[in-house]
Image (tube, rainbow, N blue to C red):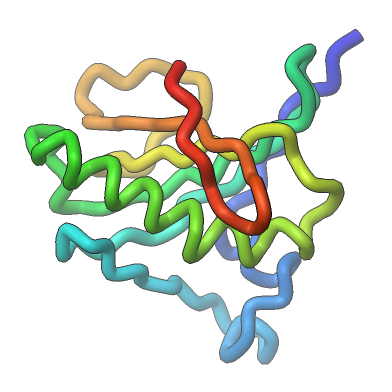
Length: 138
């Protein structure tokens, strides 16, 4: 039997992982992350489950100006930045170390696991070694 994925909205995740600031005071916050490309991203949600390949944490980000037409290296820099600067610091607060971290970036909020042909989205998988995200090609 497979464990079902757990979906945590960003506001609840902020409270769950103890983000500093207004979230601890009961006010909702939306942490904006400035990416190397200059885009601003926000965490939509974090999803985790335990598939046959092992524990995976998925950090799903939204950047309103993301087109998917950016240079490959630019997109990869943004995803790696999100993994190293946001996902890694939060891993110790959410549970056991995962086998894999998946970072996704979309131009709008989407429902996890549901195809939305109007959305532009990319994602990449990373393994964590010595506190750093290492890209794993799918």
